Image (cartoon, rainbow, N blue to C red; front, top):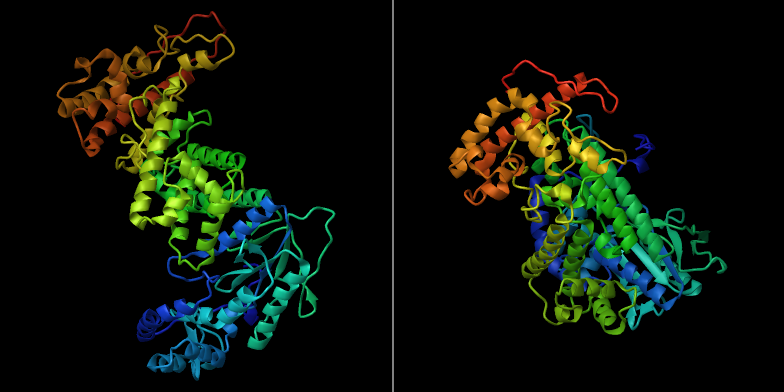
Length: 628
């Protein structure tokens, strides 16, 4: 951090290192008292709660935005920032609240012993400071700390929820939502907003922690340029009114559309940084990472960053296309394919789902999470109310998800609420249905591209890398896959390609031999100028093919011979069920295409540039073994 300074205590935040015995004791305590804490926990608190996540709290805020847009009503949001909230918990107040919850036996005594006359020391550069007493706060990194803090702040949330102020969606009060110490206040009028803010300020003053006016912000939602400016205060100090602020990892602005735009731009920026940080480890392929490993790294480190919060925001089609373009461009860059590569080829090779499908899967699984909340939870009440009251043209999140359910012919929101599926059963149903829909769509679109003729007999399998490129290749073998990958996707530049896509008249005759059109078949099998490279390796290919299917290339149909070398799995799978058996065969095929490509480049470098109509120069290179 740029402002990090060892001499300023506020710039440093320690993580408590507990003895193993202390951790075991806290874990046992947490298991015993958590049910009691959750029973009395305010329903708007969603931090560190079983079967809930920060997105549950963000869902309430998102639905407030969308409901405000439907009703064309203004909305005031206050995002509170408490200074070192976990570090200023008053031990006496905390223990009293635990006692009132019913934790009044030896468990209470044990918790008291953890906080009474506690001491700590700082370890830095293998040196340990003198011990000092801990008079307040819960341990950062402690197993019980989150449950204790939720108990401590619970009275404030209950007061906010019971207050006659704040915004409502129908009869449901949505004046506050919380995730641990991140609290959002919501009201339509300025007076009600200040009342909620004053209640929070009074509680902070009583509990001796500080709400920071400089970091707590106000966002005016759906307010026109001519609307009156309202100021809000904490302890007589005005808090800033801003156009955007981050809450629970999601950027909140003054409208739904701006929310989507800001979050998508930020997610793409973060995903790009995540990709660049992995380039040094070989993500881009220069260090010989095979395609299966590359796709795994993309799924693990880039996709979660790119799609964070998208199941809640549900971008409009234009923003969805923006994310889709980013993914396709990045995948082509990682696979070292040109931008004109047919888009379906990317998904057939990597097994990844399009962005739209990934967001739909996340949204449908999140819907199941909301439907499984307790009946008195705010999320569940909103889900039930909105699916009953909102029309099909509403901007409500529930309506948007209902449209997704109709798209995949899945049960409606009403059916899910009435007969909740088990989690694993619902996830299986969603994945099977979404995968089937997009498999059919991508396989159908592949037939529209002439450049994908070597992939036509392959079927797109979501979640699985293409059989030919998903094998365990060494770093050297992975490097040899690049020209083969271009041949499979139809982006390897031959004279026949130049003729098809060039606006000028281009001769498709092979520049090396000058005897026939330079097509993929000519390059791989028949060009006489490449025989010295081809023949030695082709014998190894024939030996492996004989082992797999009982015949060699000469005994196969002429039209299939190039297919066997470029992408042989669609033909060989009739004889072999396990793709792993193709390991040695694919190694020789990749070596053949790589050697042909290398020899062709060397020969073309020696062909002088000539004018049209001049005779072709025929080159004769000394014979080589072809083994590299």
